[in-house]
Length: 530
Length: 99
Image (spheres, each protein chain N blue to C red):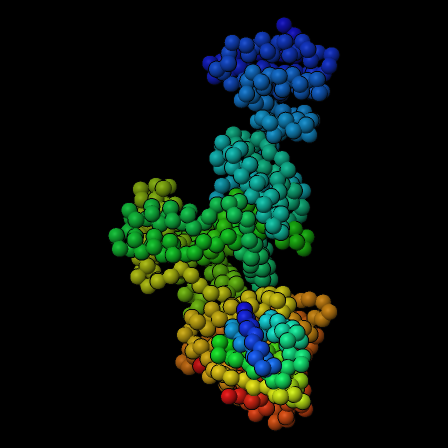
């Protein structure tokens, strides 16, 4: 027997351990040996253990190809990184299962910098972190997370992608490069004065995620996951409420935009001046209300019964968490209207409670006094909410858009949605749309010319009497349209000037047109009472 | 969306507008006028199905009106209430011939 080949046969597999170098000098002999090892044992899967394999040339690779013919489900394990590179370059990793040998890493004494649903993240040295998975059999999860992180990165979401899989105790970890990074929870806990900065960055990233369209089928659909929670809850709610929960979620339209799924402040990192999203394994697509359910839970829901929970998990107290949540919600929706904020919060809570109750019950929450008290508290809230909730949908009050006249239809349909929601008569809808068109097209044509910049459009509707307020903001050249001279509308057609009409119409249509220049921004506010 | 239907009878051009006449669709109407208007004796706009008109649309109407001054003139027919109100606000109702 040659010393390059060691064959072990069990009732589960034929294991062929290869060692040293396999090249044209010994390939022929190795081939005879391995084919003899599998002959007559066609029913058993064949595994090559490459732990001691140092080098393989093309002659050696041909041996593996021949072996694969007689053992189609051949796999190669414990492959060191040099050999893995050869197998990868030659396409062998595509043809068969090839598993790398894992470096062993210890996290003892390492700083915990993040924690998500499926694992905990530790800093192992100044440049690297490792995410250790809770599940001992985590290779499939790791593969999933790498895949979704790659999808996110390609779609423009700043995130870290793991470059190595390692063995940590009895589990696996994936290693990322993360230089000098600090998570947002730490910033909030140590620098309360940076609250508003954190809110701004956190909300901008959230809008970026939700503005990212994901090609169909690439990520799981959060609505289906939430429907699963709702169906589980039917056994723990009165019939009517259980049915209503399911029908509310069923009524949420399918949405192919990205959601993170576990977007709390331990999963957002500041690296230098760059903000990075980590812990991507919960990435999905769906309506933003599902994201807000999970955000609500992270900051408030899980701590409703015991206010210390958030402190243990995030490092800051319940009051800070509540303030942060409220500010994020206001910044995301683009309104400070308390009624609107609570309305959206309640929609998020409907899904949030269903998720928390199910999670707690599955973790034997009903078997302890404290667990039961918590579940009772959440269930009571959920039932109340189900009585007062008719839809889980909401409208944002603000949109940011490239100031180009081709984008006008999007601006008008955004405003239209709000006008429809407040039952604005058709005639006024058209007039308000005319005013909005004039202002937006003005920004598109002049604010940044010849470049292109962004415009923010905000819609607010107040009651008693119903008043619509439109606010247009751009960072372009200072320009006060209210100062523009009105065209003389008494002139006959041949003498009338073609310009200036738009602003004039806007002033005629709206009750108030107010211009302000602040912080380098043109802010134009239009008001109309219905 | 704007749909323009053209009819030429006795050298009078009638354009029926259906939909929205705004920043995005006004160039379509301008092109149509460039193409069909030269040499015509008169111009009629049928606005029965026009749902929306913004200043970009008004500018096209105004320039057409100017071009037709030396010719047989221009008039608007079947103007709906909401569109009429816009003409009112902008003073267009005084300079355009509305039937």
